[in-house]
Image (cartoon, rainbow, N blue to C red; front, side, top):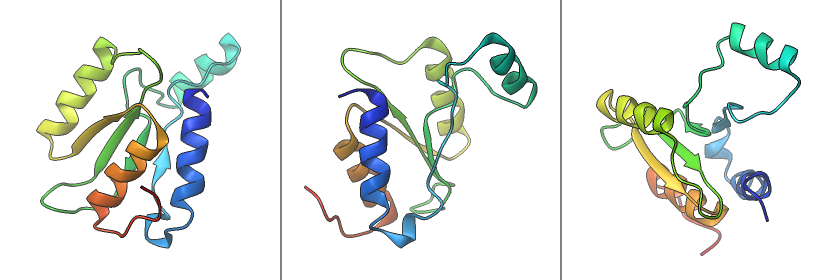
Length: 117
């Protein structure tokens, strides 16, 4: 398994919940040729922005950000900074090390019944 595979599994599970239609991935960890990476930076790619966003206001929050990690990976300093910023601006922020944890965070946040445990 890899972070990529975990995120693919997450979106396959979320597809069973039409209420989660607008949960989206943010391709900040996308690796590419230098010219493409430079182009993406010019388009607004920001180091440290978390992997997933559920742009639904719930429970007093503006939305939910989830950072996917794999294995022993930890948040980078830029990711810590973004998480602190997003939290201070009224977003709920959670870190998940597998798709099921991320799924549970999102479904609990959305107040939806889970199809997987």
